[in-house]
Image (cartoon, rainbow, N blue to C red; front, side):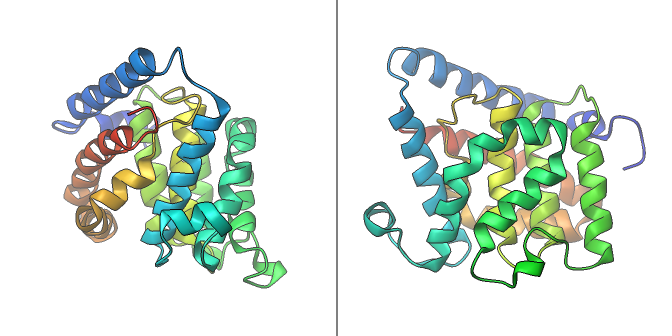
Length: 239
């Protein structure tokens, strides 16, 4: 991506803008019609808990939601929970220094699992360069919709796998953070991770397409992401 507004170019791909707009309308309706009178910190906490569980399952955990709720579940779900407890505090960091937010998310996920020297640090020069590219994309103004920004951030981290561990958890956490920071879901009541889990086969195949399928793969990922975000809204504790 070398043009001045690559996210707007991606949003202009056939069907992407309309799919994202329809999903955004659904999210707005959920938050407006069901959330205004009963949005509480407890609902946000529940959404984050559900998201941590779903993200951990996608990362290989076999812990149930009840187990995660009771005692944190297994090591993978505990990693996702550590991220969830601090995630919303990183909103201003993402706005100013996005790569610092990404590094902090990895540190939270991987603390006690990998060597301290590897926490928040790219695993090699190629990964570092790709992260720098992503940081630039997230820092530049764009006319592309926020849902496209979130989807691209997720796919870049998930497919580049810039860290030595927990890349999927980091990718999904960054996605949620973008949705909060860019005003799609300011109180983090939708559960995009659960949307991906519900559509797991499509999720995994479209990530492979993004990584290996060229322009068509990127296009397919963005169309898939609109569907996943809609499913994530259905998984909200407001629903």
